[in-house]
Length: 205
Image (cartoon, rainbow, N blue to C red; front, side):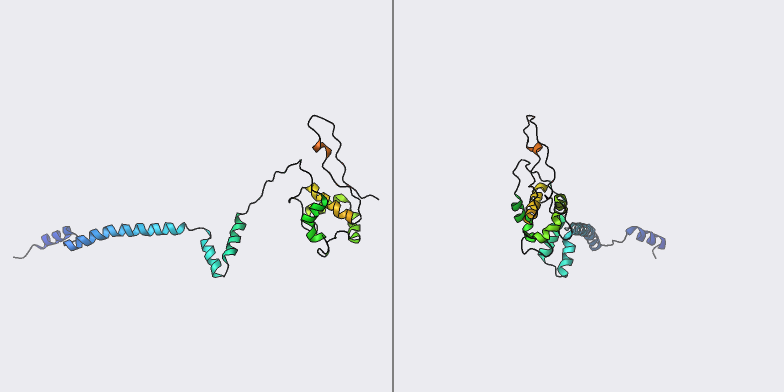
């Protein structure tokens, strides 16, 4: 007696793809293994995204033969301060013009110096410049002119740079008075009268 075809088709439809215990074990094993592999892959992806920003660039630099020192200098350049705030003691003694000259100006203006720069004690080179007046020479020193870089904003106050200008110009034949701090800045706080600030030095005839 043959089995009912309708009954056999209905039974196969309800049994599912797992037909023996071996298939059941494999299905359970892979149902646990697949999520673990997915999690491991996601963790690896996230960790690779947290590498330092310069790593890829550093690898490229290594390919082109750029040394570690060059990379360190580049990083230091990126991280350097944009600006600084410096608080100076307004009551400290002013540096002498010769001191400022030796510290900041001698590299170019002390003989033999550099070509084109007026050197110390060179009256011929300083003559036309002295005729421009102290205020013009100070402006050139503070803000630069031609190949000479600006000297203001460094280790010395603008007034001390002015003293170096007077030292150089006077060594070349000028008679500029040495600039001092305005008397008002040095006056006592008890209201004593203070002298007016001296005018900018001018060349004497």
